Image 1 (tube, rainbow, N blue to C red):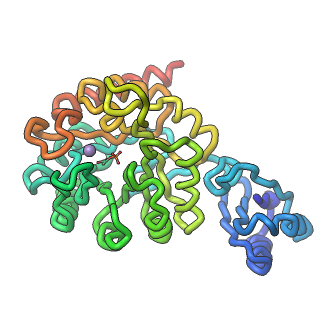
Image 2 (image 1 turned 90 degrees about the vertical axis):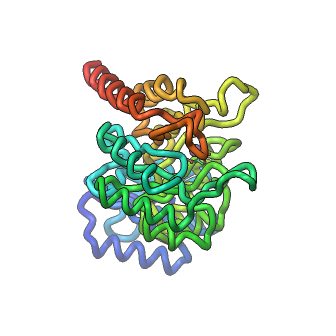
Image 3 (image 1 turned 45 degrees about the horizontal axis):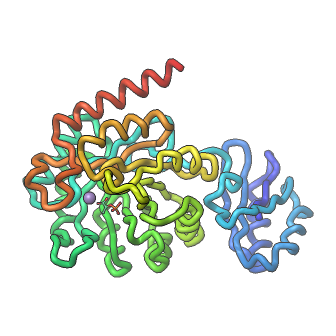
Length: 337
Ligand code: PEP
Ligand code: MN
């Protein structure tokens, strides 16, 4: 249930509603918009008739049931879009945000070189995996804490915030110490223990769509993060598994407008894991800008032919510079329409 407060509702009236909700066993999730405050009441669906009484409390304009299974992630529960600040970078607004870097942190030289390329090209956030989810147990599993330290060093040298993946609930505190954004990869989209744990940290989370998840299932995973207390959630479409084998996965470009209709959360595209080949990365990125995504998560490596993971889908520095130029042109062309 959503409780819509009157435009001029006071803080005291808002607090009173929150206390009342608490007394009937509901958790209040207030969202303070420019115009008014909206309070999401989350709890056992069986008590929802009781929530109707909220309308008699002072400062309340109306109550609105949310029929979708995801509540806090739904558009109704917020006024406007969620914009997430990471340093000076704002994700979810009008600027197209590029998160770029190698699949994995491999060495000090490699991550510093990558960070300098991303910085030079005008990228906003450095990506790099320290804990890698690999299909084979014999593949490189990541540099772990050593990799996190190198990411920190790269941030210190370039000023770029960093995003990195966390695989295990036991590593959340450690990764949160170093990362500016924590990534939940496609394989962990329904790792509910990890979602709940990341719901309790005060850092943005990038949630990737599962290989086999529907849009609704992705939103239900986001709901776990929101319901556990973290409202800084970025969604990422990274390709889904279909009958098509020409690309590594199939980029579901329509997920962007659909998600933008259903949720207030930012939506970005990963053209690297969705296609599996560098030559498709620029065309898909053009589509990402044009379709209205809030940004990209893209793999870039100083020497893709030497990469320990995902070399074939990684852009060389000069292709990354070209990509950044193309993004600018498309953004400009869209402004004119
Ligand atoms: C990654 O971003 O490095 C990654 C492992 O991606 P995904 O979870 O989408 O496969
Ligand atoms: Mn990768």
